[in-house]
Length: 535
Image (cartoon, rainbow, N blue to C red):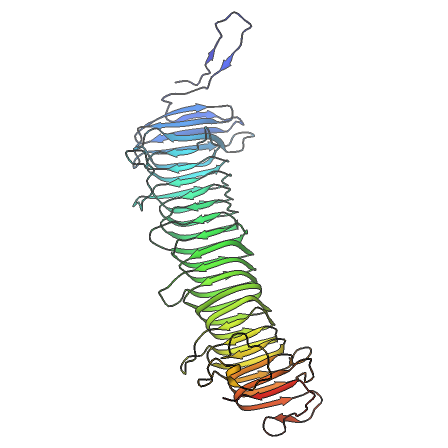
């Protein structure tokens, strides 16, 4: 039927008023061709079973309604030939089928901008195998939905597979909803405040920012976002896992909850601010910038809950990680809250200052801090065991300004300096200075089974003193080497243990090497003291 406008004239005798109604083409010619508003030549072709009804408007097409299509044999193609001053694209308000059983094998419209008409966009009420469009405007949805006989949307792990490509951007409030698996989803530009919903997501690539949500998926292969993410990812699946996740950066409004599924890898190429990330486990975490947010990993079985974490910048926020961690490397930290008393950490490296609300762990194989430690306590809860160490190696290049406490034995400690901080091994809660008492029971939790630090060195290779108003207290001290101790302080401070196997002290400007038991410093006026505790 030819394209024509329909008008109704009022019946009352009055000045003529003309009310335009929509121009509609019913059972349109196939293919259907027309020139759009800027002169481009547009062709709409449906192959396979079905008919189409097309309604043009002043800008392009208001809608394309499909009838009696076959989801495995029908295909819709919209092509544009650029003419004159045209832009090579056509606007289409919506494309939809009319019955639940109808669908499309493919929608091939790479030069079509879906503008959204009547709160719709692409709405295929059956299976939609593949779709390619140029862009989705704000509130223009892209849907391939199967429903039950009662009209309920189906979101089970379907064996049907679809691919979705949006070459440009997806506007705010626009959603991509499929009842079939989306094995490939590509958005060339950004996606605004809509959401992506499907039983399974295979490979997802978004070139720009992603402000939207991910909802109700049963598994994710990989997600790559070139820009910033800031929405809510609620991957509420019943089985499966998340493969790799790569983002350019993230805003502090980003939440990612896998509902106790594992994430293979999470990579951020910039600053990673977020509200919360919750998963069962995370194999590899890589952040090029800083990281600020709440990381929760709940795994109770398996070897490692977090295999490797590398953060190039500053870490802040709360980490709640169960079971075991392979290695953590951070640029620095500020008010970092790492309270995981049952978690064994293989290695923790900080390239700057380690500032914590608290750093609690079962054990740390190697703690290597290039700068200072400060803030709350660093506490290791591994019980005393001749076969297990609370820490094998502790290295602090700068000052220890807080307390480092252990319940179990320590291999070696090398510290730049101790400034108002404490090294406490096997001590009672609240012990942090040298009281008048010399009774071991006043300092140690267990006077019979004594916690040992095999070797402890304070290098003094920092500005100021090597030790200033700080205490070293343990059941047994092996080899102790102290450099540049401020011997005159306002209050007693120093070293206390039931047994000290060897200790040397080297002071600036003093040619003597003071050795415990031979030529140790003895000046009653000094506040630096060494106590052998009595059992």
